[in-house]
Length: 438
Image: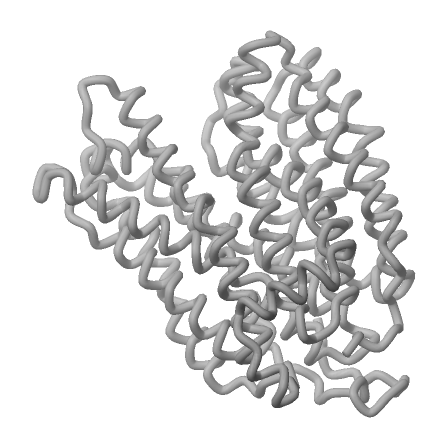
């Protein structure tokens, strides 16, 4: 994909055609989001081994549950990170905020990978793991807003969708990478080696791209162009201005991200769903990351291109409406004909339509907001939506299926959230071709 074209429209001095961003710039901006999904997939893949290492109990089920719960702790600090780091980005600039988030993320992942097991340091081990997860959650909560704001501010007007869509495509790259790493390690190491050190290798491999990302981010030019008055504002004043001056775009963005988040995390749940609800013998957990990763990369980038060509709203709405209409018969067919093939087809359907819609939404939301609250607005909406709905989706699905006995529960959950998302997206203004609000 080329990022070298320029925008022929120049509606204002503020929105005149910026220099075309390099591929290195795009890589640096989407690195944090990619690390988040690599970390999520890796932790899920090795949850049993991590549980044995840090949370040994006489009951392996209890060990696994504690391990999964510890991963969920990271969601608790996301809203705080979204508020604090997002406001910091609108107060001090995008570049220092992006440097802070990637550094904190790397420290959290390194601490998790380097913490000795329970057998070596006792209860200090789970304490350090929980601290690492809290630190990661704080950083991730504040990552998406500054990074996405930077991408759309540095992009030519007619390519903002294409560049911002790399935030969604980077999730697919991370899923694919984590699935391949997990597959290779799981088939190369014994259970004992996996518990002792194998899962640590997977995390450390993800960290190898951080030094390059830090180097590039440090060299990026600032795009916020904040006035002296705006720079003198405190973080609390930035948040106060966001909540009192722009509550409607913030609310619409939160609901739009909510429906995207739920469809994404239902997709990540599908391997577990196949094993528990459909009683399939899934040959390897690599299948879901492979399908989800490839389709997310391809169709997120397609969604960004379509959003630049035809508009944000139509690309947000049409795939989401199609997903609402298709998900019930897809699950019905899956339940009636349970197999690995039908499971992967259903997962692929969710990923294709969800990625198209999400790619348009991730650019439309910050385009509604002025520069003075753009990063904090997207960070806040994203962090709260992912915390409340991403952090609970798998638990909610397991609970719904357990209480109702209805294997169609994931479809109903997606339909309900999808309808709310469609309403919010329909109420959002069309921002294609417009100069970014100052």
